[in-house]
Each structure stands twice: as structure tokens, then as C-alpha cells.
Picture (cartoon, rainbow, N blue to C red):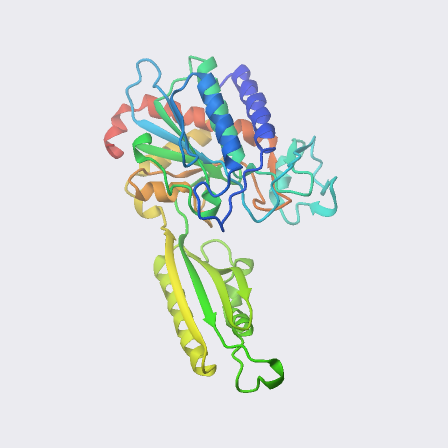
Length: 427
């Protein structure tokens, strides 16, 4: 157990860092062809580099791709695994992220929370019932015009605060820690340019949701882009001549099964997710994300799209279609099943922090999925934030402390157990 002095240190440190980090606009840009996809991510990266250097970590580096690396040598006498702690710096590009103003709603009373800069915006237990688990506690939101950025600046705050605790409380023991903060996770490129030589044998992403969550399974992911080429003719003489690519694209989208969309799925159900539809009479494009815990089902969805396009080319003579599909990431469970001790340690650390562990698959993906397939088994641990990617994103203040606590307990568990070294990969 951690004493009250350490717990207060973690609460105050994590809260201060979090409130500071979220004010930096770090939205990634899915239209960009550069890495990082947006220059504004570099501002937070530079700040983290400087803070890690000030803490006295070694091998601190901010590379040209905007990855921040650092190493904390093992506690004296600890000869254990090398462990990676990872969070991402970017926030979702789908909501505004500039001029974030965090608001602390003190002593939450169980009712609806309102936003001072958005009169019609409401956050209530009706849409986020987890709020009722935090009655009497402090809740942090943004002011109503932006997302909050708990995804994933809460994870960064937890890692940085734990590192600071290791510096100030020498009785806290830990293995060698390899720290990496990644750009562009929100657009699926968080590990695109990562340097595997900077990582440990096992890892943990601090990028989950509800307090207590531990996740070692995620979606398998594909992206399908469909291009329609039509033929424009003056609408006054268009009968039997015009092939309107834009309207055909809209009809195509209407035939995507509605019951297989995010709005109608939960738990282990996969989906088609329309990301973008653009175009005119001559040319139109549709971008669709395909998600499922079984890659075979995603392949079936690709086959459905192919057959649908064949039907459209027959129905609309002169129409040309083109389908491009790419795999984005795979279900990490395939790898994690080989290294159960890595997930077990996370369960034990969460329990040691006085929290009931919640095991559930991620209805999404993390950097950990790709790291696992690179040979570094990396499950995902909670930050405590909820309603990510929205203006009603929120986090209970206590979760910032508990995130750092779990990291400290996790490090202790790995530092103490030498008999399990042979159950993790050698690197």
C-alpha cells in the first residue's frame, strides 16, 4: 500500500500536469502526408522532453518524427525486465482542440453537468451512467467549445507523475523503464516511425477509458476507400446520358447495413463506419472503416462491398468503380495469449490500487496493438476518461491519481518477481 504522503503527491502532481497539458492543441491531421501530421504536436513533445530531462532520466530524445523517448534505470538491486510505458500526445481531429479550458466541477451531486461556453450542451448520467460512480468527487470537463483531451493527456500525466514519484520516493522500486510518447495515434500512425530499439521487453499503453479497465484484446481494422467515376452532362439533356457519381455514391452508402454501424453495435459486435463521402457528378469517393474482433468478418465485409460495386456497374452503364482496402491493425489477443503474465500483472496492480479490475475488449485500437505484433506484448490500462472525442469528454479527478498509483504498483510487481522473466520475450 502507498502511504498518504505519496498518494497526495500523485494526486496533486497528476492534476497539475493534466490541466497544463490539455491546454496545448495537439490535434493530428488525417489529411496530412507528413509525420508528425501536425506541427502543433511538437509543442507538447518539447515540453515533455524538457521535463524528462529535468527529472534526470537518461537517453532523453525528441526525434525528427516527434517521438519522445527516455530511460529510467532500474532501482538499485533490481535486475528485472525492461518495461515500456507509452501514451500518445495527439488528440482527435474531429472536434476542436485549440484553447481548451478545463473546468473542475467540485463535489459532483449526481445530476446534469452544464458547460459555461455552450448553453445547450449537457452531460448527464442518462448518456454517461458512469458519472454516478463518482458522486461527491470532482469531475473535470472542458468548457463546452472543445474536447477535453483526456485521450490521452491523462495517460501522459499518469506516467510523468509516476516518474516524478520514483525520483522523490526512493523506497518505490521499479525495473528499467523505457518511456515513449507517440504522435498521430488518433489517425492510426502512432507506431509508424517508432524505434523498436528504444523499447523494453514488455509494455503497457496508458490509454484506456473507465477507471479499472485492463484490455488485452482489440478490433482488427481495415479501411476501404471506394472511388466512383461518372459522366456529367447538362441536366437539361441528361436523360440516359448522365452518370452522376455523387448521387450513386450516396446510394451505395445507403446500402451499408444500418444494423452494422457504430450507432447500433456494442460489446463484441463489429461495424462499418462511414468516415467521409465527397464528390460531384464526375467523381466521388467514400471512405469506410471496417472493425471486428475477427478479421475474417472484416474480409466478408470487403467481399460485400465488392459484390455491391459489381451490381452498381451493371445498374449504371458507364459507371466505373475502384476499391482500395488496407489493413490497419490486428487484434492483439493473438499475441497476448502467449504472454498471460503481462496482463496478470496489470490486474494485480489495479487491485493493489484499491480498484476493481474491469476486463473488456477495446472497441477500437491502441499503439499497443501494433507494438504487440512487433514483438512487445503491450496491453492497455485505464486513464479514467470517458466520452472521448466529444465536447462532453470528462474524467474524475481521482482517476488521475489512481492511474499513477497503478503504474507504481505495476513497476513494483515486475521488480519483485524474478521467476517470471522467462515468460516474456527476449529483446
